[in-house]
Every structure is written in structure tokens, then in C-alpha cells.
Amino acid sequence: MGRNYFTDEQVQQLQLNPFVKNVSNKEITYTDEFKAVFTEKYLEGNPPSVVLREMGFDPHILGKKRIDRFVGNVRKYQARNGDVRDMRKECSGRPATKELSEKERIARLEYQVKYLKQENEFLKKIEFLDRMAEYAAKRKQSRKKNSRSSGK
Image (tube, rainbow, N blue to C red):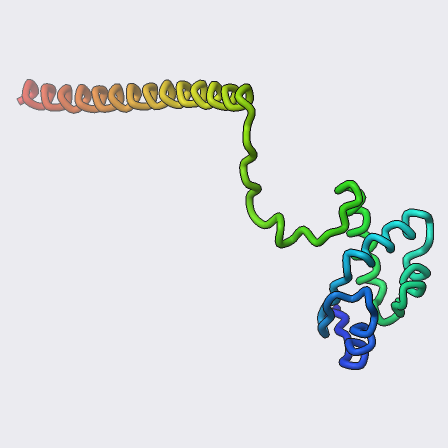
């Protein structure tokens, strides 16, 4: 099952709608105003197809899958306290660290010191176990030499 591409005529028709930010044969981007109005009307209990028709869209052109995906995004907008802006460019990658209060900074540094102390203890144990293994290997080797030389 492939993608539902728009025909050139459908693209031209969609471009005339004031609620369309950008449209290509593959995808459509709606304006923030459309998202806000659609979200408001949808949450009032209106079916998506009715809201789309009221706003100048033909639901058959968009297709069920696109409409369902958009309604899913509306639910995500609600989880973000109703913020309908496109966050893809603003929130890419790891978020910047915020300015910490003095208390938060001290707590973070104390945690870091505690973590580094544990790491040092772990490394000391590994180093000790390595030395013990080397010592045991040398001792075993020297016993073999001694048993060979005494056996002659």
C-alpha cells in the first residue's frame, strides 16, 4: 500500500486555501491558525470531516489516513497545553541546559562528586583484581618452572 499523492490539480486547489502554508504532491503543511481553529472545533465535538469542509478543504482529497494522522497530532497539541506551533525546527536535538539556581547547582555538583567517587572505587577494585590476577599467573608460572627444574 503506497502513499496517497496529490495530483497537480489537487495541489493547485489546495494552494488556494488560506489555511495551507505549503503543499506538494507528497505532503501538506497547515498554518498555525488552521491548527488552532481545527483543534478548538474538534474538541467541541465536531467530526473532523465537518470541520475540514467548514474551513474549505475537501476530505476526499486529503484522504482518511492524512485526516486521522492530523487528528492524532491535535491530541498531541493538547498534551502540549494547546500549543499548535510547528516545533520541529525549534526543538531539534538535545535541549539547551537551563540556568540553574545556586541550590540546584550545588545539588548537581554534589551528585557529580558522589558519582566520581564511586567510579574511582570501582576502578581501584578493577586495578586490584588485575594485579591479583597477574600475581597469580606469575606464581603459577614460577611453580611450573620450579617443578620442572626439581624434576630433572
